[in-house]
Image (cartoon, rainbow over all chains, first blue to last red; front, side):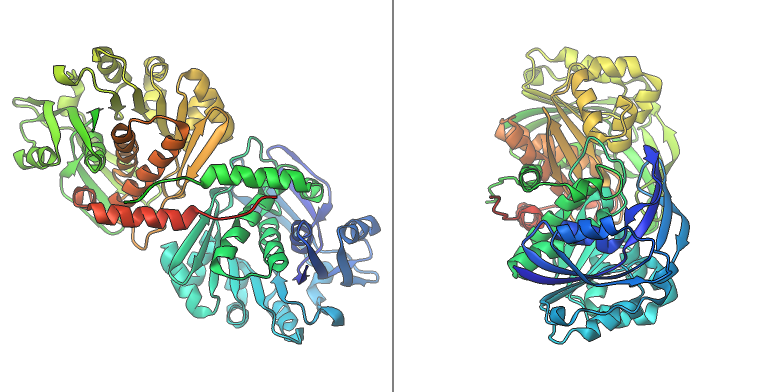
Length: 308
Length: 308
């Protein structure tokens, strides 16, 4: 069993896609990361903040998955972070309609004392200063810190972002963000430059086009599973991150070979996430279907060429 | 050694990309397919047409790779097919600047008598009526017919295209074309519909995002190799097709498992093609670097997860 701290948002999302729309439903990076990671054998603490309007049943659901919520602050009289977005017809791009930071604006994360020795730390997408304060609270250096971030922080708080990047082992960003951060169009060259900023591992998420892992001049690629139906991409990247870190925390093996497996587990979790709106699918995925889908990933990617 | 007939264009291309531009250089589907396929142990016949302006040295180069050119008609006083295109900054899209059909307008392909029993037939992108006439010339039914086509024929000669599709074993198209042909957005569903039109195998080419092989409810995916430099995507799809059919013709094994290998060999050939302008790289690739790069494909994609 691995000890894992997940920092990120708990949120309300309102989503429009070509396949329908939702009212305010449970969302947030920590939600998806935690749900995906809870499919592995881990002791997980969520560190986040919500308002008084956040339903107790959502907290109960997260707790029922074995997550420790001592690090989730409930702000009296406060309102929970709210995001609303609309997906384009191809589901590959979206417009943000509303962002209400609410209690997230003053979020001062506190890692529960008994988790300050966690070996694995997942920094969900948040202001770099907030991510930094979490790293600083860890009393023993984690075996592995994974950072998720996005272009917004590159545009607005690049210096602080670089401070975080310098302290992490893995960064996960999408292809456009890798290009923006590095100034290189080729993802191979982008990864080389990002390595030099600190992270030993660079994971580039390409949505329906899969994910690339770079390490030390080597690359590994996991496709997204081709699906009959994709309803809602929201949370797919966070589910990927949750599967990735959840598997690593469980196995406690941070070799390149095992990170390859972690990328596959991440893609697997992402493939479930997109099949229903919001957290519906990733909340209810079972161990057997996880194993069955891993088998599909094997037959999707494994081949047997004899190279003379 | 496999016996392989390749039908397609021999052409002049003029290419503009963010990395430079070329005058009229050797191009055409049959050129790239033949060059890629000639890296395997095959007896290849090209069936095509050129004008009097086509350089003897280009014909000599193709012959030097072991290709039989008896089926290449040289039209006295005619001009060779000419295509000119300009790539956008991301190299993923391009505008056609000029298309001069020239001798291609009246192309009546003739398969040399001694190749009418070939076991493998590759129909490069051409008018469906021309592709049909080649199928009809085969005196024994080939073990495998592979069809490459494009949206232009879906827009203008859909009925004839359907006649060809009904007679082939494999169709290779890109993702947008698969959606157009099937009316389905999901590639999984698109492949199901295209299977019903005839082909047992559907290969969906996604350029820098790799290639998918569908068969009977099963899927296989090969990524494009992440490269430091991509200069010119022209011919990448045809090089893919050449590696694919070249490997199959050599091994004469058309099982799904071997088609997976063929997709990897195709991706491998495509990865060389894009590294230099025109045919420069694919003309000069060596057996050792082909094997080395196959090894890279293995480490890029192979993992070892124990599934309980």
